[in-house]
Image 1 (spheres, rainbow, N blue to C red):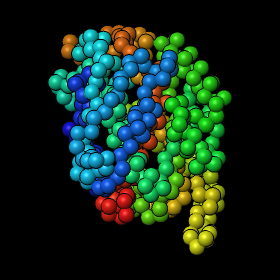
Image 2 (cartoon, rainbow, N blue to C red):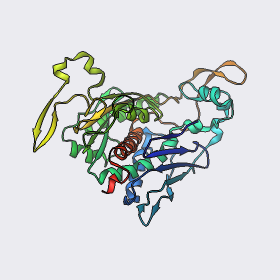
Image 3 (cartoon, rainbow, N blue to C red):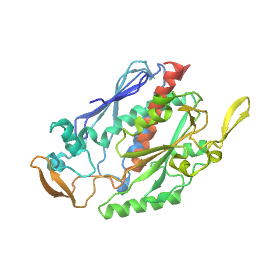
Image 4 (cartoon, one colour):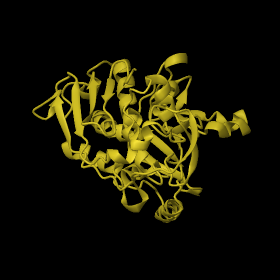
Length: 363
């Protein structure tokens, strides 16, 4: 089982939903990055459950940095982050030792690990593990900020309700990074949350679409073919529980457009080559072109719902029905937003280090 990602900047994760703790080891970071503990807490708060639209399971997510930071700065050696689990109710999952929950990894985990997997709360497959990804991603974002690179993600759609598009990217990113429910339009936020609550009352769940922009990226990041910016970033994004689709720029919409509409143009502004009206998401030939990087992620409805579903007893090979127990989210899209930001930051740190060397963030 491989639980690591990255070439120059690498992250490795460990832990289970109901285990003692979650751990992330972030290797290859530039030495000398100033660590802002409050900023890491802020990023973790954006992943935290929010009121009735989220799970009742609340974890403090108090993190410990065990290595790689000395006197407030990265040392250049691996940064180890630990977050302890403090609010588990494992008895809610006793039936899951044999009953596979539809939409979850229970059956595939059984097929791969032959019954030795920790099934409580989804074990290592749980979205709970993303807490350490967000903490590690916050450190990566601090490195990117040193170079003027900013990341912002909003809920473009949830339960059929759409948010407005990005307008002033710098101002919109700043606004989003101060919101727990990351929507640009307050009116859309109210409608989305009402639909989430409605699904919750019905014992059901809803999904959504996240849209991410990255400003300040230089042209030249990524490799043609197998390590393109799209393929490397998609690799990490598809590793996030619940992500079922990724598209860059206008994505699938380009299939209904003409080349003259999609191509965009190039102009010289202030002695620099600048893309204009580019619908490719800031990437050409797998390499960033210096424009805003833009992509979207489809987030599935939470698989655990409080409706009776048909499933199987994996131990006795019998058909059965199952009604879930425990504490679960009627939607995860608003919490996944923080994980997408973290995944983006870690990926971009890796790409920057490969392009400009391991000391890129403090040069």
